[in-house]
Image (cartoon, rainbow, N blue to C red; front, side, top):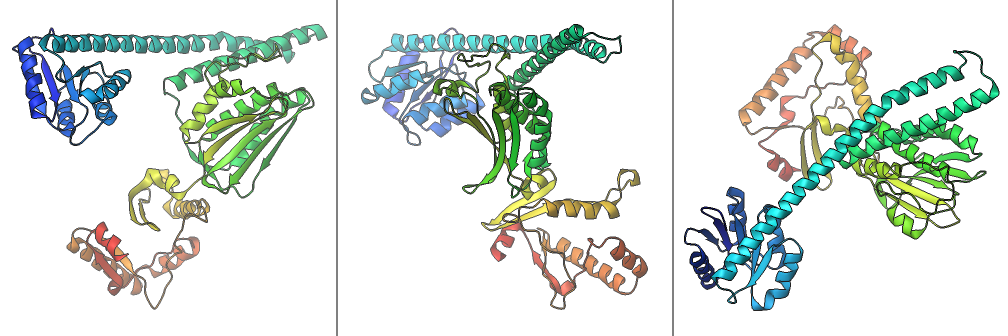
Length: 510
């Protein structure tokens, strides 16, 4: 140990073993600072406060036993070297700990001060080497990502020029073309489009690997996205005389996904299916619900191609993977499409898998989360508390826009409410009906820690109701009802209020 005043954390519950280890440490170096705790929880707290030069760890403690002990320490302080102090009967477990990240182990009672000092020194040196290698690896990955991103971006500019001027010539703007010239230009255009697609995949894969791909989920009709993808790929399918169809279950409610990213995933799968399906084959896109899963919609893209071997199925979603058994040399690409698709689906909280049998085609299936009211309201939910298994209390902040240039509250509020009602899942969400005038009265709950605030709020509401009943603004009120039938505001009598001090009391009352 080369530190001037090395700090050692000893986690050992046996007083005799702890004293012996402390003695061995002092024998090897008198200025060593040893902190001893007898519980793993106390050791983890010390690691939060100060990272020692090395941790000496007993695996069997009053509050932790076996492999969980060293795993928790490694998780808490991954950069701190750990030396396990093992009993005679725990040597196999100690060796397992070394294989999983611990630097070394010593058997209690079988080491002297020199052996302990050597084990600690080697542990720190190995940990320093691991840290250095890990940092070097991260720097190399960062450099690679920056290089790929820069090169891909710079390639786009000349490629765009090639594409634009080729299109200009094909359109006849630069003069008439004979058949051979047109054929050559179409070859250039196809190649430039292929290169542009590969550059786009390279950029997306680089973003995915660095965690920079983002999604913006919203409510969307899955069938519309599928039809858009079919329309965009129809020309490619017709060129190869491949049938392209879709079947969407009409019972599917809206899904909660990013429309652009969902379309991108579908296009990747359709392009892959068309590419590997022979002429006169077919590609089918299906979307359905599964009775055993009420949270996701299932979308599959199936083709009648040659199929995928079991070995290829295990690697098909890996970055840069291409099937070595491909027999069509014209199938160009970087092997990034399925990798990108997997990452996009994962960001949505879904999953993707492939089913295939040689000679009988391939089907890729992925899931997207179905819409629920909580997902739509999450950005504006102010309070969400679980009351009982069957009751949820959700408070949503909806307030009028004070600036007339930003919107019209009288017009926008009904539209907002209509949107919320149209988005619910009938079997999952409940929207209470508007309050009606009722002689029996309704129960209004005021939840506030301060009873006086709640009481004053109810009193003010009662005064406002009394003023309205006297005819204040009666003409305007009547006009409001005609113009905005969805806005039904009722003013309860004060005797219909119930005061609740906090959410816990609300749980009990409900």
